[in-house]
Structure formats: C-alpha cells, structure tokens
Length: 301
Image: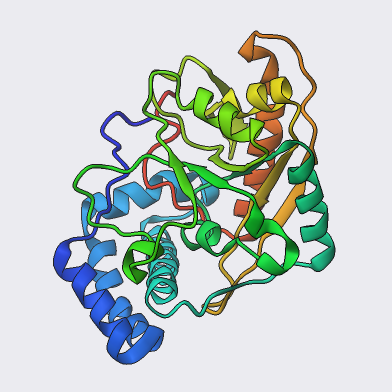
C-alpha cells in the first residue's frame, strides 16, 4: 500500500458546501450539473490524474495519454455521482435497496444461525449501500450491523447519517487497533451480527496479508476475514454494489462461501483471498468506471 494514503477526502470545505447546498435547493440534477465542471477541473490536476491512472493503466493498458485522460474524467464523474447520491440519501432519504425477497430470506436465515460476514470493496455505490441495507421487511433490521472502517481525523467527508442528523444505522470497528479489529469482529459475530469488511484494504503492517493476482499484477489484500470466518464457522458473502441509478442500490452477490478451517496459520487462506480478488477483477471488467481505489495498490512491484 502506498504509505502516504490516508483515506482522507480529496475535496475541500467549499466544494462540500456547494454540493450540499445544490442538493438542498435543486436536488441531484443541479448537483450533477455543477459536477460536470468541478470534475473537469479535478481531472486536469496532475495529482488527481496520477491517482486515477494507477488503476486505469492496469484496466486499459493500451491507452494513450488522451484516452486515459478521458477515462479518468469518466471514472471521477461516476465517483462524483455516487457521492452526490449519498448526500441525497442523507438529506432526503429517498434511496432504496433493490434485492430479491428470496435472497434476503436466505441471508437472514444465515445470519440468524451463526452471524454473517459481508466482504466487499471500494467500488460502486458502497458508500451509501450499508446504511441503506437495512430492509426491515426482510428481517435484516433485527441484526446488529458492523463495518470495519477507519475514520480519518479531520476528514470533511460525511456519512449519509451525519448529513441527516440521525443515529448511525451501523456500528464501526476501527481497523487501526493493535489486532486490526479482529477481537471486535469475533465478538460481533458471536452475537450473530452482520459484519461488513473491505476485502481490498490493508491497515497496519500487512503481516496478515496475501499477495494475489489482480489485473495483470500482484496486490496485497487481508487474510483476516477468511481466518475469522473459518474459526467462527460463519459464512462469507462476496457482494458488490454497482452504481446503476440515483434512486436505488442494486447488490450483486458473487456467492455464499463457507471457509474451511485450515488451522491457525493465516497464510493457509491464500486461495480464499484469491477467490475475492477474482470476483473483484470480474466486477471491474463489467463496470470499468466504478473501481475507486485512488492509490497504487500495485506499488510493491
């Protein structure tokens, strides 16, 4: 991982104010209009173009500079729309989760039996997916929900519940703890909770990680989720939330996995980590402008 990555928003207070003000007075459409110009300015900044190019060079290796510039604009614009819709959800609350009743019954029964790990990534509409992923009509509202998330001190970026002034619908587990949050995750699962973990992000030393194949190179991703799932006997669902419209979140589930207990050696779970990396690679091929890791995850090469 790039050492100077902090997760802090690249925006600034004025742009955040402009975004929220435009949503309040004109809704998403007015905010989208401003985004056309703000995104152009941001994309032309060398630092922003460089950040976007780490991924774009891997996804589209044959592009020349001008093609990559156009793709960077499209990538940034998609990310901007996701952030606007998160703001709309926080201020107006009119975002829905569209998922089949059969799937939700299945996931509810899995969680009720032993708890559940949702493994996802920094792609699509993940920023507004978890707060909206309550679905009382399907029985998921009765489960405690936890998200492994590092909140950067002084970050001006706000969650949807912070914009609405409501209580957070999820509990946060800090991955910067000495154990990476493992004990907190295990404690939550023992209470039959639903825990969401970003499978593409390592915090700390990276000792408990695996180097896997991804888009023609090698990246490091955490092994902790698979070891915990195996030791606790809980299923893992790989799920992504592709951005399709401003009115809804459409989860795409890659499958329900039961991780075999291969012992205490965390490196034994490399193959499970590769399954996740392959699923993420498949997502980027289907949605090439929805992978939002703006730093060089291939840096070790």
